[in-house]
Length: 359
Image (cartoon, rainbow, N blue to C red):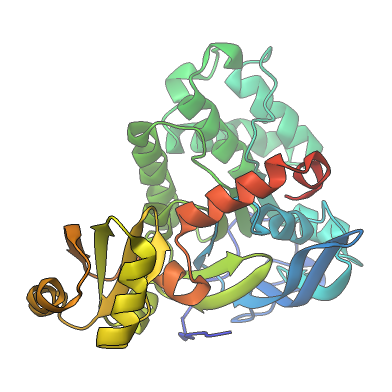
């Protein structure tokens, strides 16, 4: 597994978090100053013979925004479920805020917030009532509940809708309310599982605006899963996961720099012949991506005239792009994230049992 490591200076837990130690943990236990907010080692989760997560290892620093980037079915949600103590690992270990996710589940749960893929709000309560119910569950002191509810509602721009029934909210408003609920008890780590899935591009952009504001206002570690390349660009570091394994890890810029070459994509009438000609004439490895042939070369704009002259296979169109995270995914997995999702969907559609068990 390729990995790019960066040393970061991080903050501690949130002011006002319950605990007692100076590190925000009870009696000084848990993660000390500078210790990883999340530490995962050789984490495995099996469903019978299906291995959904295969020996995942990574660490997330305090105050960092860390992204899990991969196609649907790659093991993202399964990993996040184990870190949030909703699933028991088959093997391996994980600590969140300094506490073991298997032997210290209650301590982990006190210190995390979670925004699920699917809404878990009560539609028949108001926004404020949903938050008050959550505050009761998490033991937020009653004297602080009102001010904390007001704080998080203002943070996500819903203060003026605090008395509105949730069933009248749009999808974007519900997601903002869920983010507010996840923050209500001042968690040290906030988990966001596909935070903008199913939302339109404008609403997605607004949600990310609120998340960026959150990063500025609250000293919190964020762990998010996504299959959107543009969302991964917001992260301090990302780990690309495919078929249950982390294949590469680093900052977005480091990962794009690791590709180092331009991506050339050509449309031809015979992709197999074009791939063979690329190998024979230029010693290049071409792959079929979204119906076209893609390959990587330095200075793509100077290579294209030679390509037309020497390939020997008619070219219908050509495009050149600088390295993107999609190129990173293709470099380390051999396919684009869209191709990965398409092939995974076809496989799962043919097997309803796997479809039900995979996430």
